[in-house]
Image (tube, rainbow, N blue to C red; front, side):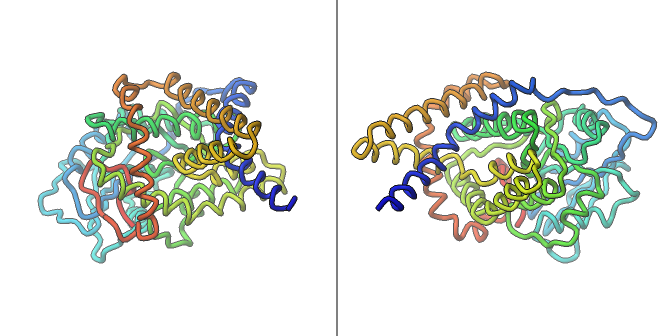
Length: 392
């Protein structure tokens, strides 16, 4: 009986810990004084970027994406547009900085498209950055990435800000992104670990990218999960560049939301065990970066541990009032931490107004959970307005 009780309490603690973990990271970040940003000194041989844009089936937004990239305030880059299973007859880019690639065989994978671009590099680019087919970039994007590359980092994640807030779902999607950019980006990196990768708006030395994924054939959503594990397990840190901004299309409809989240949930169940490998590797090697990053990878999706937290709190009202109070305190800490992430970021007032619809947002994610098993057979292509990775 005592063993059952101990297991019951352990399960509760593991869920409860996720409520307070972000605020613990914030305390560590504050004690460390934040990550010291050392401006990089421009050199004669600034990084030469290969900018990889991947599209699958749909090309409507590619002209705007490429036009945005051509406005970058930088000289040494070339754009590679990989139009997988696309009709490119209407695509014309009147610039010698753009190479349009249409694979003869359907690739159906992000990483296959990336390596198709790499194989067609017109010169040996020292670095590459990955942009989605619905992203727009800030003109200073590459310069901001270089701030960290010139400090010696080999991997950098930028910020994906919303380019549309025209619906409640888009606003809630943006609120979620702000929360994760703050804690899984700025605070996690500033606490001495690594920023998590977001699928686009990220950059690497070409050699590191090839080292981590060149021997693998990653299919389905979640190549960024495999990539970040490869980077951190090699004892590199992923820097967070909060001023390297790409503008990302947010989810606008409920059907789109369910399909997108089903894929994300499927990805978490598929790859969360990588967190055990990184965490225990960090413990064995006394590597702070790996220990903390491993805990982050083991964390369930936000809505899952919030629902479980409320469930455990209600159950404990009848079992142990002191434990129920502990759950209530944990939930209050989480809500406070969520508010801090919004208040310390550039949050549009429309996002605050949308927060009353969080219960409905969670309900759709529960529906997505039911569809998670077959997620990779749902909606493999993206027309527009969806932040999912564009290919399988």
